[in-house]
Amino acid sequence: MKRSGGVSGAVSLVMIFCVLCLAVFAVLTLSTAVREQGLAELTAQRAREYYEADAEAVAALVAIAEGRETAADVTYLTTAEGTQVEFGIDAGGTQTLMVSALFTDDGCHILSWKTEYTADWEMDTTITLWDG
Amino acid sequence: MDERIKPTKSGLFAIELLIAVGVFSLCAAICVGLFVRSEIISQDSADLNQAVTAARSASECFKAAGGDLQRTAELTGGEVSNGVLFLEFDGDWQKLPAGEPGTFELTMTLQTAESDSYSSALLDVKRWTRSETETVGESFLAWEVAALEVVS
Image (cartoon, rainbow over the protein chains, first blue to last red):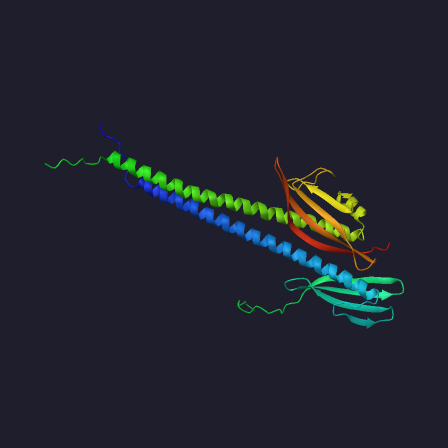
């Protein structure tokens, strides 16, 4: 009767393949998780910076209304309806919270309260496009 | 006389199998450790994302309510106690009824503003770890929110 001894080296090959698969998937999972964490922290930081800028803008607007000094660089514009004020507050990264308000006899009217991209914009010319 | 024992084919196979199982176990233990670490990091990221969403929602309610904490509580479904708004969430970020202690807690504490014309509050999100002996709260998100008085 023939004795079954197995194929020498096959077990090692299967083991190496399994270990490689495990290692690759483990590293991919970890790198994805770390990137996700970075994105989540960046989102939280941006939100924090926005609300800090927002609180600063509210304080500045109230200071202007009460005739007090404010740290923001305010532009005053006198119009037929009243005095229009405009200022920007850094909201982190390349964002600035731009506020525009009109002060009339009725009180303060917010004209705009929005974040704007303030970094220099450069046109990407690296890709050659077919132009006919 | 040379009487060396010649290794059999099955004996060699058994040794190879043992070594393979040992090496595989070691590598698998390391990889499982990495998977567990990834799972913890992913869970923390998901919690932070959910906390930012809940904090943004509460902040906007505070602003819409013109800085009135009681009105903010009505809008968010929270509870005001001693001048602090409490919002409780379970481990899956489902809102819990007012007064029920949760895994995550969002609080809004009114700050003293420089002027009466606006209100500001300190928003804080905590993760509570409860054991039989002690309860530990860890703050992982905080910011200040200000609201102009809403004139209707």
